[in-house]
View 1: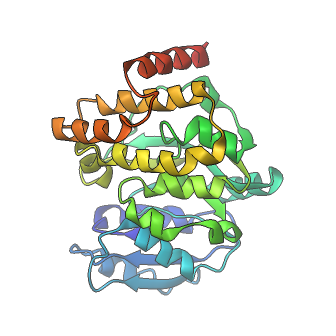
View 2 (view 1 turned 90 degrees about the vertical axis):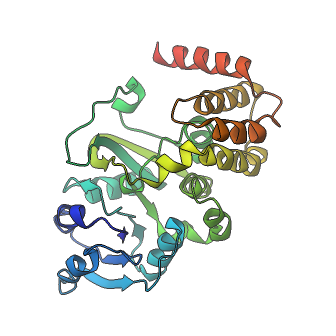
Length: 295
């Protein structure tokens, strides 16, 4: 559980971790030099039999994915769960995702998430029918459909993955992508096998003003870094022209959101304009594709 300045949420988060009904797990706590009373709160849990370690940085790493790597290097279990410190889990999350990994022979399994505000109140969201049923699919197909456009694994707390797949992860590449490294992390895992999805809502994903992703979107940084990922991964997947148009169309749409500043939009355009498919026509193609999906 990596933490930075999430003291108001830590008790609820830790209670939801320690209440998991899966019988065999270890907890590794990391604090990235918080300036609130996070460390004091986390120290209350160090005597719990399932808490293996509390690792406190003297200085802030400045990089979420450095903390991910540090925690993972301490882990000894067959499966890894990166439980973000401001989220909440249902007690059956680990049990259900372990079942999916084992029954579907998957390298990565994730569940549906309920978004909530800073006070824990649910935030209503419309979901397509495809997210209302369980499924599993080849990782390469999952990447084409769900990771190169909109990142459907938008919250690490909803994911369980096999530790044995980690040698294929390029931590240097991921840590350079401070806004989109999670997307590349899921892609590098998914390239190695099947991905499973559980439609049951087992994770609660907190939205608040301190999210790193908000500033990255304003600056267009996440869209620029998504293009870097596209350039790295597209050659590995033999994408069709239709698939390229859908992916480019999504990022054209993302670039024009009101939450992106004019400078951010210019930065995003400079990156994606190098793709022949990118532009208004790709956006229209994306809209058509989405309309067909909803039929």
